[in-house]
Image (tube, rainbow, N blue to C red):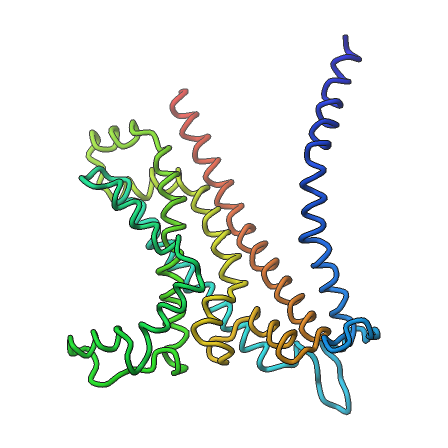
Length: 319
């Protein structure tokens, strides 16, 4: 009996491994192998003009000293500017999308006539392909015949057309607002799904006790939807750190909005320097990994504290 019981979990593990093997193989082909090749080329002087003719150069693409001067990606001021732009874009867009997405989800979770139609309409910006929406907003923000300038001048908000995407003062803000417009429905959708699982008894008890709505949100709603909200923020953070399409379509390779992905693409495609571009792409991968690990590390203490609070409440209820 004991031997049969021990063999059963092993057979289940073997069956699970058998079913997972195709997915693992596909993931290795489409993700692990290209990543490994990119990291490898970062240590070479490979070029797109002669991709098979290259030699190892060690860390020269990352950082080296030659005749008293520093060279490499980590010594490139343009790369550091791209890093700053990427972090600013990610922090601003994800923060705005989280706040607006939660607010939108709370509204959509309420009961009102036409709620289904409003829910469908909210998803339209997210459903539009990113390149299409970016090009659409680029025309709307055009300084000569864009509808944004025309409307603002008609309302008396500005006295002359503003070059929203050509000025370094407004280009980054414009790109962030377009990204927020497009991806806020994604956060709202995940948050709304989490709100649907919150027990109504909690709200009924809070209403009977006369608890203000803002306290209900902070002490009941937010703790219960925090896991789903954390997942939404992680997904949006990963997308924001590797953003390429919306920025490239709207502002091209302008230094005011250049991100790490655009910098890597510029080195790889425009300059055809596969080694230098691969080093830039590898550093982008490391930045995304470090930021994600830091975010998850910040979440872990909150999760532990939330578990302790729930255990305390359960103990009080049991007592």
